[in-house]
Amino acid sequence: MIAEKEIAEKFTQGFDCAMVVLGEVAEDLGIEQEEAYRLASCFGVGMMQGSICGAVSAAFIAIGYKYGNTKPNDVSQKNLVLAKREEFVEEFTNEFGDISCPGLVKLDLRIPEEMEKARERKILSEFCPKVCLRSTNLIKTILE
Image (tube, rainbow, N blue to C red; front, side, top):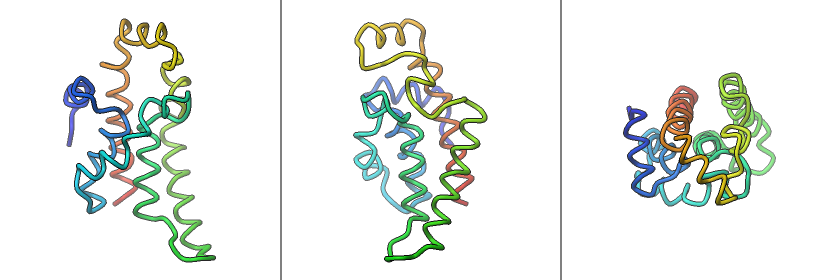
């Protein structure tokens, strides 16, 4: 299991929240870590659109990969994947209050000045690793 410190180190190496989280559950999904990094590479930092946190997007990718429906009109599988997603969202929001990047970090990281504030406040090096670790642990529980 990855530690917060290792997650923070991955951030300094150019990995983002989505890549770190999906990379950590790759083995649980039966895929290579490198493949997980590629799959998640556009989802970090709220997709840089002020959107859903990358750690949450990675959870949705993992849940969809394991439980997603693949056949037309497969209502039972669709209901299962949606229930698993809702389980994640409920647990995550109970702990953090939001699933959006701006809602979590209280800044809009698309704006250079706010990204600088995030760095000054150590949000990316301290808060985001906590979010990634919690997301990873929640996903692992849901994938069991």
